[in-house]
Length: 114
Length: 116
Image (cartoon, rainbow over all chains, first blue to last red; front, side, top):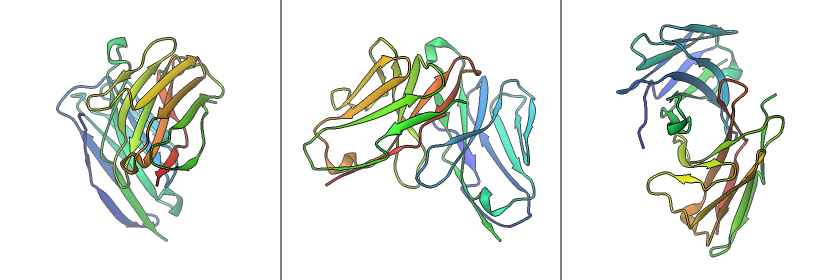
């Protein structure tokens, strides 16, 4: 099925650095979501964005819903070792006909060197 | 809140046998649950959408007779992999849609299936 273009594919950073990753799509979504997945576990919802232009923070995480509704970015400030994991963006069309299905990006593998 | 469990967390079975995986929403009711499959170092691929009280909707290329889905209650959906083969070995993850919380999907911890 369709996938979002998520970049970068992987990042190696030093503890304390800021991180930025983004997702783009050829089609419009009503909702953008960011998940984090640790090895051998299911994804955990980090941030949900519901309106074009919306900027939302969750602790050291900040995400924005692009004005065109075709993109989103996630920033992590002052990274710490426990930020290690795979980050996925996901887009959703909010209608019963779509069954509220999510379309996922391919993920960004983040490694933080202490 | 919004906790989803899966059972078992891992299972090893022999080729030709069937395996059932359970997905439960523990603190909310979910009329819709989703089943995903994830191969190593890859993203989640949606297999099917499970709606309580009705037949599941399968994504293109997913065999409905091989991956049987039942959503008999508002808190439980099951995925049965029938006549399993080694190529069915994968990480299976379910999610449940919480209509009371922005329609967000909350994921279970996943089930690692190994078919020998």
